[in-house]
Length: 453
Image 1 (cartoon, rainbow, N blue to C red):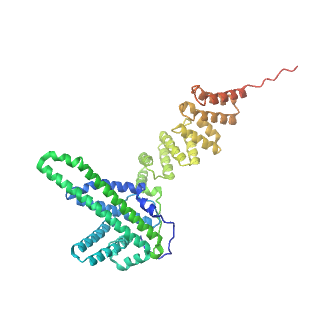
Image 2: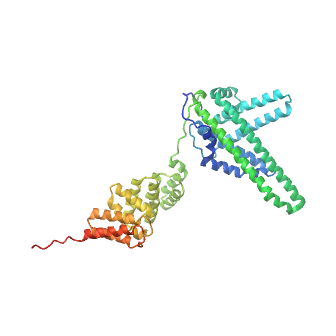
């Protein structure tokens, strides 16, 4: 994040409840739970210390991404994504330096007043130094005293709230440290018992108290990861609110286009096309469209062009069914109707995958001024979807459209009769269809002119 002189940015910032619930968003909670599940590994002898460092570095790495997005005014939690700036390890080193300083004060400063003043100074500086590292993505920035003092002055009273929150975060960290230490002690004791008593002690490691100890590690880890994420979000919110005083202009994160998510794949497809390997390109792009959410209309159009090039009519129809469902679900009725017309030109017997979608598509076609297309879709509805709840409505709509388009009461009656024959007399719509059949039959009967006297 680059700092630039700018006017203060004032936007509605989330309150304390929103800050506290921020890590509960799906994108964030998924990452935090994944890290918490790995926490029981921290009780392993020797290796556990390495796992703990990796997990804490990962937590700081994610927290910085949360901070940067929050400072830029984006209050939706990000997905966990690796990168190469190593900020998680830098912040972990900084926190270890603070822990070392706290330990040194406790161990070597005996007079109460100097020791308390030293601990208070660490608590005062820690949020500003952490924030400075997160903003500049480098550790030496934390020791530039003019930057640290500028952050404290710019954030005003909000900074003191961060100090209090930092003290609370430290307490959570102490608690998690105690839980992890007790877990390690338990594992060492049980392993010593196994070495002396053999298999008789193995059950203690994997059942009862052992499972409770492992569960405690995961819960404690989740608590700490949650607190760290909320704390860094609070820092970002405060920075966003005091942007002008800090001297930088928030830059909202640019949204990636669907093509940007799949740039490597599209380059591979271009390479296959250059070598005229059209079938392979179509297969590759089809797999992407079937499994990935971040795809664009242009990618679907390109896929259809490839299918036409290799004359894959079945592939075109299968893609049309899935695409029509997606377009209707996204309220893109016009595009869905256009896709249906294209599919019907390939195969007049084409229909969407489900009766509900067929009915929805026919209604959209009629609404968009294409009643003949709607009639084509509904004409054989009872044969294709005999158990669908919309069969009666589909038959009545088809009869109405047929009568309006072709002035053929007999043909309209046959459409209703086809549905009626697939219903039991006890069906709640049976009487409605029977009455409509009688009405259409009366319209089909020619009026008799009495002979002249």
